[in-house]
Structure formats: structure tokens, C-alpha cells
Amino acid sequence: MQRPSLFTRDPATLFSALPGPLRERLGIGSCGVRNLLDMAGRGLDAPHNAALGAVYADMLFSALGESPLNGELAGRILNIPELRELIEPDRAALLRSLADAWQRPANLSYFQNLAARRDMAKLRGFLEGRICAEPDNLFWREQALTLAISEGDPDFALAALDSDVLRGLAPVHAAGRWQAFYMAGRHDEGADLAQETEALFGAGFAHARAAESALAGGGRGEGLCRLLASLARSPWRVNELLRASELLDGQDQETAPMRGQVCVLLYTWNKADDLDAALAALARSDLGLARIAALNNGSTDHTARVLAKWQGEFGRDRMSVVELPVNVGAPAARNWLLHAEAKDADWLVYLDDDALVPRDWLGRLGAAVQRLPEAGVWGCRVVDDAQPLLAQSADYHLTPPGAALADAPDLSRIEPHPFKLSNLQIQGLDRGQFNYVRPCASVTGCCHLFRRDRLLEAGDFSLYLSPSQYDDMERDLRMLAKGRLAAYQGHLRVRHRKRTGRSTLVPGQENANALGNRYKMQVLHGAEEIAEATRKDAEAVLADLQARMERVRPALEEQCATDQDS
Image 1 (cartoon, rainbow, N blue to C red):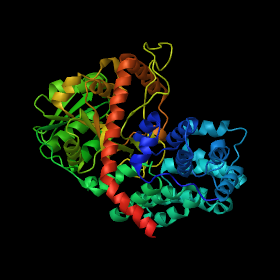
Image 2: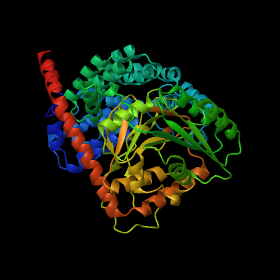
Image 3: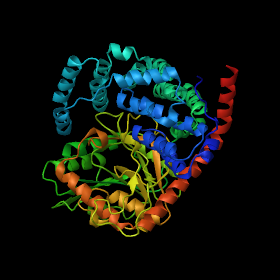
Image 4: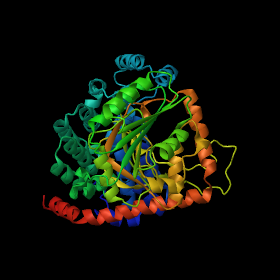
């Protein structure tokens, strides 16, 4: 049986054929295991023709490629009735072998307890013991690979993949080893491994992995060719489209000066060592004539000494320090800095006290301002400082709800108006798939830039959300209601010393505050406002994609012609 081909190699034609809700969801991004499974499931549940069935099958195999040892997922794909005629025998045999080699143990309570406590040494030792006791059960090797990625340990990943069973599943073995090689910076070897994944995960997946290896190794030309080859075979790959369009115009290398007075605003509470590192990174960066204002939120550690040291380094004319006797919370601190310390600034940057900026960070934000000058806020990509291949924040989009929102909030639920923001960035390794500039609904408050007048348009940060959590997102929603989207600058990567997202569990008290503030944020914004904000975000995303499709079309047609000649 021949593998079914997609009915088009043109992303624009494919997008026009997709159901509207799926088109909007795919516009947010084409990566992340959960995201891909959700989109493929929605597509298969809706009426579709065989050509679109091949698209959804391609999405499912790509999801499996992002989690290649997941035998449970392999079995689910194999048992989807709509796909039985689309999966050729050799591929089906690989899925069956992977599913058979993966067995979930009956009792996982001890393992789950170790994971919840984040006792990494014991967790690693336990997994090594289980792999030794059950060497042919890929369940334990999958957990070990997940832990290795979380901790940035390619040697542990390769050890978990050292299995005769996996060597007998060559594409699965190659996909797992590719992840380890990417973490280790072995990009030339990773590019070779990428081609070995095609037999199971598809040509679009293989070329995308080869592109990521090439680009990480500095091969922009080869990376662009591979991105186009991936799009030619899987035209639904939005992230590859975004990256290809940026590379074609050299936008991935752009910086631009900020026009006007810039003030960098920090507030801090009992994080003296993190603050010291953040200010050191600022001092190493190209600050130009930017000023710094720091607010000590009632710290009881040696924060005051750290601030005094750096005020001496920068000079009192460049850095002001506010000392408060108590912690007034994040929203109040933001508002204090805005109104008391940055009255004369044209541009304001709020920077977390544990955020480490690169040298060209202001120039990168300046480039984003030039690209999207009408935005209400400009933000960046944030990664884990301990494991920089784990993204914490990227461009946030309001995900279309599965059902219509109720007119009145249900105050008996933890989510009175259950709107959600996309979280693709925490669903796997950061392989560069978020390296682009585009409009979005919200950006992280870890490092975000405002024009002072536009910040005042939407009003102060909400004191209802004290002491912290969601005050930046809630302000972005108010901004969106006034017609201004956020702008995401994915070429600016800021390292964050606090471990968040998939790499940590939030302590109980902080988690309770976050849940409470999420509840309050959803009560503050009604169903009609949320629906309108979701519509504006989706329209901006699709308009941006359509422009990129036109930009990429000539290069993609040339790639398709090359494929036919070869």
C-alpha cells in the first residue's frame, strides 16, 4: 500500500480547506504533543474527506515523534478506525511493536510521589533500578527520557535509550537519540539521525528535525532548505512556516535602537542573589542611555546591599532605588514605579529580579517595535536558566473554547469563565520553533516593554490581584479590549532563574494564590469581552500567517520543483 499523500503542498490551500475552529487552533501553532493530539482529534471527529484524513494522520505521527517512546499513544493511533486504511503495513508493524513493548505498571504510587516531591536524585535512582529490573519495558525508559530532558542531561537520556528493543525500532530509537544529541549540541550527528525517523514519523517530521539541527549549528541556508522541504510535505506546519519566512527576510538577525528615553523597572523581595545576577546581566548588556529604577519591596535579606552596590556601579544618575518597609505586592510595586520613578520616560521595561537578559536585548525589542509598531506591549521568549532548552513563556494566544461561554460567570467553579491561554511552549524541548515575531494576546511579564502613554491607556496593574500572579496577563486583556494586541519577539531569549512550567511544581501557598488570582481575573472579564478578545487574536494570527504564506510561496514552489526533479 502506498502512503497516502496530502492533497496539496500549499499551506494557503490547506488552511482554506480546514474547518474554521481547527484553522484558528492550528494558527496558534503546530507543535506540542497535547496540541497536536487535540487538533487531530477535532479534525477526525468532524466530517472530512480522505485527503484531510491524511493531514490529521500526519499530525498524530508528529505528536508521537515528539514523545517517541510513548507506546500508549502508538496503540491509540493504531486503533483509530478512520486511520486504518491510511496506515501502510510497515508503519502499522512499527506502531504495534512499540505499543507491545510499553507496559504501564499496576502500581505507580511511589514513582508519582517521588515526582511530586521533585526528589531528582531518588527519582533517577529509582528509574535506573526499574530499567535494570524490566529492561524491555519502554514505559520506564520513557520516564527516564522525560526526566533527562527536564534536567538537561543528555548522557542520562542516551543511557535510557540504550536498549536492544529500541534498536529494533530504528525510527523510534533515532527520534529519541535526536533529542539527546540536540541537548548535547551534537547537531551534525542530529541532522543525520533526523533522516532515520522518516519511516515512522513522516518526511515532514524528518525534515523539520534536520532543519532544527542545522539552524542550531549555525547553518541558516541548510536550515531554510530543510524547513521548506518540511512544509512541502506537511503544509500544516505553522511553526516551520513562521521560521522560514523570518529566515527569508533576515528578520531573525534584526536589531534596532530604541527612540526615546528608556527606563528599566525592577521590583524585588528577598531574592538578593538572583537580583545581583539580574543586575550583572543588565550591566553587561547594550543599555545605551537607559535608566534603571529598582524598588525593594520590604526585603529582610541582603537585598539593600546588592542594590547599593549596583547603584554605585551604574551611578546615581542612572539608577534610582526605592526602599519600602513592607512588601506591597507586585501590582502596587509596578504602579509605584510607573508613577513615581518613570514620569519622564518614553519607554518602560518591567524586568523580573531573576531574569537574565542577553547583550542585545534592547535592540531585539527595538526590532519588534519596528515590526509591530501599533502593539500595546512587546514581550519575549523566556527559558529556564538551569535547562535553557525548556521554554517557560512564548507568545500567548486565547484558545477557542470548546463550547460557547456562558453570559454570567459560574462562581461555583474555579474557572468562572473558562478561557485559556495557549501553552505550547511547555509541551516539549525548545528547538527554536518559537523563534519568530508576531502579534498575540499576551506576553510574559518577566520582561516586557511598554510605551508609557499606551500603558496608561489601559490603566494601572490591578490591585485585586495582589500580592502577585496574573496581574500582567489581566492588564493585557484590558489592553486587548481597547483594540491593542501584544507583540511577541521570539528572537529575544531571556533566561529565568525561577523554574516554572513543566520543570517545577509550584509550592502550595503560592499555588493557592495563583488559583485565587486566576479565579478573580476570570470574574473581572465577561463572556462577551473574552469572546471578542479571542476573535481579535485569531484574526491577527491568521492575517499574519496569510502574509507569510504569500512571502514563502515562491521559495516553496521552487522547493517542490526540486523535489519533483530529484
